[in-house]
Amino acid sequence: MERAARLPSRRLISRTRVTLGIHKGYPWNPLESTDGSGALRYNGGMRDDVGSSALVIVLAFALVALGLVGGAGAWYGYERIVALSERVATLEAEVATTTDRLARGLEETTSTLSSALEEEQQKSQMLQSQFGTISDTVDVLDKLRTLDGQLLKKYSKVYFLNENYMPSQLSTIPREYAYDESRDYTIASPVLTQLSSMLRAAKRDGIEIYVNSAYRSGLNGGLTGFDSTPAYDWLQKNAYRYGFILSYPPSNEHYVFEPWHWRFVGEDLADHLHDENLTFYEIDQREIDTYLANIYD
Image (tube, rainbow, N blue to C red; front, side):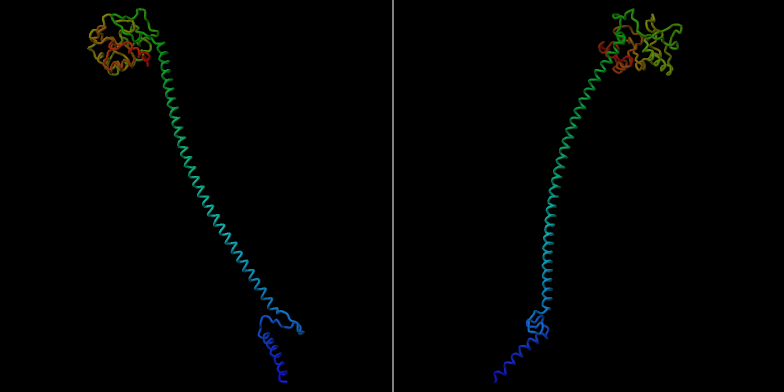
């Protein structure tokens, strides 16, 4: 009997533990009856906690995944930036090299073109010089064809001017410059302008000079004492400026001294004789002929 009385007590203790577990608020009770019939079910609080935990885990995985994706993207972006920086550096180096090569090429091309241009300019100048020389020669020949070849010939007791010679153009000297106003004195037309300029200049200096012998007139004895007059002194100092020289100066070997006899030879030749202190008969005829083309310039 003693043994039989103990068994109920054990059942009571087991039920009491289960009951106590429920009252203490445990999350779930695996032995709880759903309908009082003794059937067992899971506690609803357990399902809610499991769902929350799963959501947290999913969110954690998502965050981790996003972190991994973001990290991978950042790393990829970093690699792209590095690659692009290296590419930019390479392109800058290539541009610098190309620019330097182009600059050298441009410099060489410019130098080549400059040399070619200089060479062409030299050729052009040479051609212009040659053309100018040819043109000048043609001009001289044209002038010589129209000029009187007797204008600069030397005359003396041995070599005389042909008695039938007559210049192609003659002009009458104005009577205001004529020694004898009742006579007509003629002179080669191109020389008249220079003669008139010289006589006017002398008059401005207070010197009266008149023409008493012109083309083919002659003095028949000359003007005795003319070399002692102010007119002679003025002519000695100024006549060359107008292209006139003393035909037969003192001590010449070709003719007697004639202080009244002045000859037009052109300004260039007259200047040369004056500057070199030479007389017309002291230089060679061939040198004199070189001045013929410009006798009236």
